[in-house]
Image (cartoon, rainbow, N blue to C red; front, top):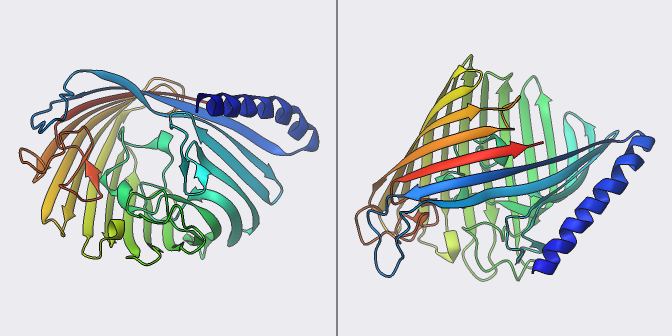
Length: 354
């Protein structure tokens, strides 16, 4: 595995060295990017159960260690992004180190098409870049989306002012935590997703999306998501609601997650945020909530380089102080797919990017 990682790193470095002068001479627009998210975390471990080890000490690690490349040649575009923080296992036809590998053609604002692997168009917060998140972690709804997959997608933006759309069809959503039994049978299974959105400049964004991933001889997974974002001056607010049915080949499974977010930027260098998550697993009749209280400090020249995020997470619901907790740092609500903290947690993340 280490040899694979070394080979991939060398390949990326060599490509960078060769591509930069070539694209410059050809007049092709190109851009390298990368970022690392270094973490310090501590859990209260109020309810560690069974044989689960105590994890109430300080732990250091990383959420993402990524490098990528974007290219544009007229109406032709492409992107490659890899994450060296992954173990390198094969996942849904691609090695999990590869996050995005796409190429496309833009006919106009109303129609562009792309092939490859990328995020499916379900989930508002999920489709936000990992280096632009308002809190340190992807939220509880992330496990219910279709994740990244390989396929074809037709998209359009700025239609009739601010209307947008995405239509996706591809392989089964093998990378999704809600989908099982499909990663080794991609030929017989497939997924599709559709999203419609409306943007009122930077003031407001609203979207509605739905998707499905089939499981050969089993239960298809279906998901629906609604998202709303609002920003005016230093204030920002978000709301998202997602429901998934048939997760992990369980016909009785039905989960719902919603969150409400509020942020206020007190100065160019400091933003305060509060986000409340609520998850319900109807199959097990259990609930789990997480409340994030956070501060974002922008220590660099922009909001992504030198960003320091501090989060305190308050856990509540049936997964806390009960036998339903797994006793792990990021646990499920008693067996459901949606993941959240079942213990209070302190999360610190420092991001450097270019």
